[in-house]
Amino acid sequence: MAVQEQAPPALVLEGVVRRYGEREALAGVSLTLRAGQTLAVLGGNGAGKTTLLRLLGTLLRPHAGRLTVLGSRLPAESWAVRGRIGMLSHEPLLYRELTSRENLLFHARLHGVREPRVDEMLAAVGMARRAQEPVKTLSRGMVQRVAIARTLLHEPELLLLDEPRANLDPAAGELVEELIGPGSDPARPRTRVLVSHDPRAGIAEADLVLGLRAGVPVLLAPAAAVDAEQVMELYR
Image 1 (tube, one colour):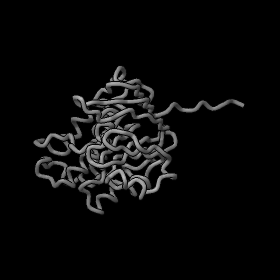
Image 2 (cartoon, rainbow, N blue to C red):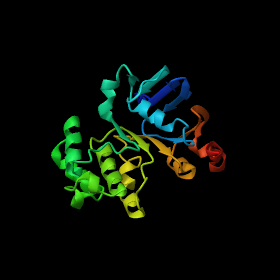
Image 3 (cartoon, rainbow, N blue to C red):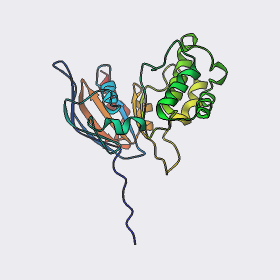
Image 4 (cartoon, rainbow, N blue to C red):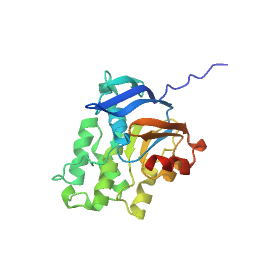
């Protein structure tokens, strides 16, 4: 009987350190996340959550430790992995003077995505009728929808999601839920790193939970073994 080869981990962090001046924003983070799994990153303000996302998204370099994303060693092989990552941050990364459609067309050209995909994603987030309006005229919730469409436009293997439901009303949240979820196609497992200020929601979505306090990893456990009340200590 042939032995099926196991897919390599999606993320491997070994003692990853990132500093801002003398302050360690991340102090020795180590974990392994398999393809198709979701990592919830929890912690209060200044815990290092956004710094971790920026490292994984190739926007920052680690000062120490080893970091491998989708089989590529960072930062040396960042070029090989950028097109396979979709990142949704607090900043929508949209040009305010351009329309929603123009923003997505620009992003599509960067990734070699065909134009019909742009209209497909605008419809998927409920923005087809407002697609020709400049981003600067849209509400924060609408901007968030367009930012989600941009993040998913090139069908990335790894999603880095910083509070993805921020500014969304219940109807919009329901609309994008399937888009930012773990996916259901076993041939294309979607790996997610999810930053959340809501411990219960984060744990419910995750396979693995990382808790940070002032850059220090104080919790790393399977989501099934994590109690929400225990995690609340991270926010005090």
